Structures are given as C-alpha cells and as structure tokens.
Amino acid sequence: MPEQISAVDRAWLMMDRPTNPMMIVGLIVLRDRLRLSSLRRLIAERFLRFDRFRSVPVRDEAGARWVPVEDFDLGDHVLRVALPDPAGRRELEALAGELASAPLNPGRPLWSFHLVDKYDGGSALIVRIHHCYADGIALLQVLLRLADPAPGAAPPEGGGLPSTFPAAGGLLERLLGQLAHGADLVEKGVHYALHPLEAAGAARGALGLAGELAQLGVLLRDDPPTRLKRPLSGVKRIAWAEPLALEEVRTVGRLLGCTVNDVLVATLAGALGRYLDSVGDHTAGLTLRAAVPVNLRPADATPRELGNRFGLVFVELPIGIRHPLERLYAVHAAMQALKGSSQALVTLGLLSIIGSLPAVIEEQAIALFSAKASLVASNLRGPPEPLRLAGVPVTQLLFWVPQAGSIGTGVSMLTYLDAVHFGVMADRQLIPDPEQLVRMIRTEFDRLVFLILLGAGSLLD
Image 1 (tube, one colour):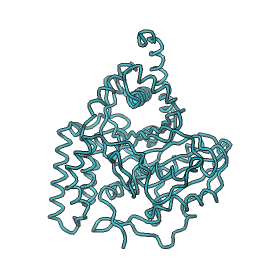
Image 2 (tube, rainbow, N blue to C red):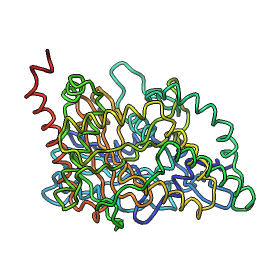
Image 3 (cartoon, rainbow, N blue to C red):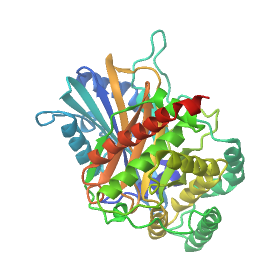
Image 4 (tube, helix red, strand yellow):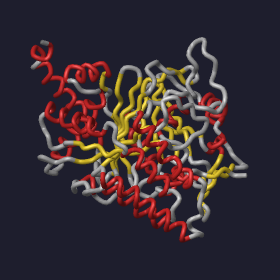
C-alpha cells in the first residue's frame, strides 16, 4: 500500500510554482574525471537504498501518497551533459541556473543527477531533489553516503541517516513535546477537502499558530519594497563566491566576541546593502528579513527515514548599516534575541497544518509567509574531512535553497574542509548577474578584517 506523505512534506510539495520550482540544488566539483558508469553504480547501491527515491508524490483529495514507479529506470535520472567552450565557471553557473529553473518530470521520481564532463580538468555533478523528499540537512547526509568510506571504515548499511545533525535547544525540545499532540492529529490525515467542517477547524488552528507568530513580532509588517520584491520571471541565475577561510571567520568572531554565524550573516547583510545601493535602491537605515531554516531534530536523533524536520526564523539583516563593526554588532544582538525563541517550532507546526488544508488556504498562507522576508538564507555544516566519490577527490561542495511564494533570492552557506562556500540563486528580474553580489561578499569580509587589523593592538590588549 502506498505510504502517506506527511503533512509537512505535503506542504513543500504544494509550494511548487512555475516561477519557483521547489528543488534543492547541489553542486559537487571533482578534481578528476568521474565515469558515468561509476556514478550510476553509486546511486544504485547507496542512494536508492531509500525506497522513497523510487517513488513519485501523488496528490489527491485525501492528501498525498508516495507511489512506487514500476518501470523505474536509473537512466532517466542520472545523465551526462557537456558545457559549451570554454567550459569554465561561468558556463557551469549558467547550466546550474538553467537546471534550477526547469521543473522535474512530475511523472517520475522528483530528482536528478547531471554529470558534467571536462570541467576545470575534472568533473562536476549537479544534483536536484524536490524539497518534499527531505530537507537540506537530511539530503546532505544522504549525499555524503555516496562518498567513499574513510580508510578502515565499513560502507554504510541500512537506510538510516547518521546522527550528525546539529542539536535542537532544550527549549525547542520542550516546546516540541507541547505541540506533539496537535501535530499527531494533523499527521493522521483528516481529509479536509472532503470534510469542510474539519477543514474549518484546522484553519482555526492555523490562525491560532499565526497569532503566536504575531506575538513574536514576525507578522507585524511586511518587508520593505526593494528590487528583491519585484515580480518573478521564473528564470534563475546562480553564482558562487570564492570561499572564505573558516579559521579567519572564527578568528574574527573570537576577537569581537561574536559567533561564526554572526560574522557570516553580517557579511551577507553588508554585501546585500552594497549591491542594492549599486543598482539604485536606497538602503540607508534599511533592514530586511531573511527566512532562515532551523533544524528541529533532537540531539540524539538517528532518523530512519527522510522528510522535513525544520522550522523557520526571521532574521533581521541591517543592510543599511555601512560600517562593518556596527553592522556586526547589530546582527549579534538580533541573533541573541532569537536564542530560545519558539519561532522555528511554531512555523513547523503551521507548515504541518498548512499541508493538511485545501490548496486555496495554502496559497494564502504561503503569500503571508513570503511577504515577511526578502530572501531565504541557509547555513549547513558540511564534513571537515576531504571526501572522495568513486575514488575521485571532491574539491568543492555547494547548494542552493529553493524559495517559496514571491521570494526570489536564496543565499546558502556550506562549510567544507576549512572553508565557507557561499552560493546565490536569484530570479533574473531581481538580480540579473549574481556574480556581482558574490564578489561583494568577499569585499565585505575583507573590510571587516581590515578594520580588525587597524585596531589589532587594542583588541589583543
């Protein structure tokens, strides 16, 4: 019997729009050539251990189900592609943008791997997986299972994910317990489309959660109008920045009494402000919000299944503060205020209810969410050790988060080895050439380092 799709996963399935395919896009850059036969063997042996990747999500009046595909063909999903000359970074960015703009075939399982030959003397791998299958944290762990085991370690067995997720805070775990009963009721699949009275009751529940969000100050006002709020074209542009040395970021944070996340978010805010100023927006004194995913798995979680288990918090980005130190401390204060907040848990509960409601109500709820932020920003901690795929060293890992509703800009940060890799995905109506923005990320970080060097004596006293 087909497995029911959870309400939260169904919510992400329903968010698909022609202008915003709900896909997580990943890029793996390999030093040497990877053979297509080797890649397909890895996918068959390790990726397809998860039965869900052989299934297609099907919506109906009762909700949604995972339906196995009887004529599953790996060749439909693992493909080879060539770049036009000179087959460099700009050509790879253009290809990634084209794939991020193109919806997956709804008649087949919603994922694909495109092997790019002869990129920078080696290969590259562009991965697309629909968000309804799992969130970024779970999918990163799945992709890491494709990597060669460390010397002396056994290959991964079974379908479970390794327990390497960041821990949810104690407050969030207590709140999770308080909401568990209500979430269970939602997950047990009330058929709201067929039972309007039950749908009305769930809608009242959603309004109650929305009231909690309002008390947290999230729904008090929409984000201010900038070019990041323009109508979307559906054509994505992708770029990535030169990586930042993780030890430098740590040192900056340590010297200034801030966290690594504070430094990265402040750097992003500075780059966004500088970019918007350069294209004619006036950002002086302006603050934008970023919707930021927060992992809600318990510290000891060892999930045996895929799925989405995260909430969202709305982080204030003081893009109108031009001085790097002042901006950093503004970000630090905003991040401190979010510690212990129940925003992430409340949004998870709201998504669970949204995923059980008729599409018309879901549409209104997503519009409500997307009006409150101008971008999505995500930060994942990747492996600290070097990876190999079928014996080929992995030199770079990147990913891009999808954007829901009217949001058309996403910024992702992933730590791999000793570096932080920034990726930007944006609708071409908002940021026609994200390469300009990613260059400014490095500029803003360098400005912060320069100010520290100027004041190094006082900082070290």
